[in-house]
Every structure is written in structure tokens, then in C-alpha cells.
Image (cartoon, rainbow, N blue to C red):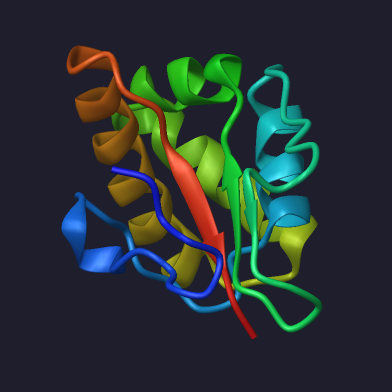
Amino acid sequence: MAYEAEKPPPHKAHPTVESKGLYPELLEHLAELLDADGDMGEPERDWGKDGPWVFELPDELVSALSRLQGKALDEIARRWADTACVWVTVLGPLLSRLATLAARARSEKKGVYLWVCM
């Protein structure tokens, strides 16, 4: 089913990880820490200058996220918090949820998307 530009898709139609302040540049920093391609490129969907915008996460980033667990996840969360100037208590749980979503997407052979709005 295709969506018209005037009618953004309901964000609850698919498994989600909701977070304020998650934007492409923050995920690109995460990708660098994971030695993965994090180039988000142009939005897949663009509803204009005030958004929202939808970006597809690169397959390499989704794969790297899907493999994160345990101490490796904790270490990446700590390093990500250092580079993003955000508390690890915020990014740790977020990263864990992103890793779970990425693993599910991988197992179902689906993509992961970032919905950004102001």
C-alpha cells in the first residue's frame, strides 16, 4: 500500500522504538562506533521543510545492531553516549531496543526506518 505525501503512515502500524532526539546524524555516529556504513542519504519519504521525514537505515548498520548484546552492547552504549553528549542511562536502553528491533527485522528480512519530525 502506497502512502500519499499528504497522509503520513501511522507510526504504530509496525514495530517501533520511540525516542525523542533520535536523528540521522546520531545514528551515523553509532554506525562509526560499530564500523558499519551509517550513511542515511536522502529521506525515503519527505513531507516538506517541516517534515516528517523517513530514512531507511543502511543494511550494514541494521546487521551490526542486530548482533549487539551483553557487554558489547553496554560498551557501545557508553561510547555512543560519550560522543553524543547524552547520558548512557538514556542511550543504553534505547540501544538495546534498537538492537532488538534490528534483530527482528533481520529475521523477517525487512528494513528498519527512522521517522523524524519536529
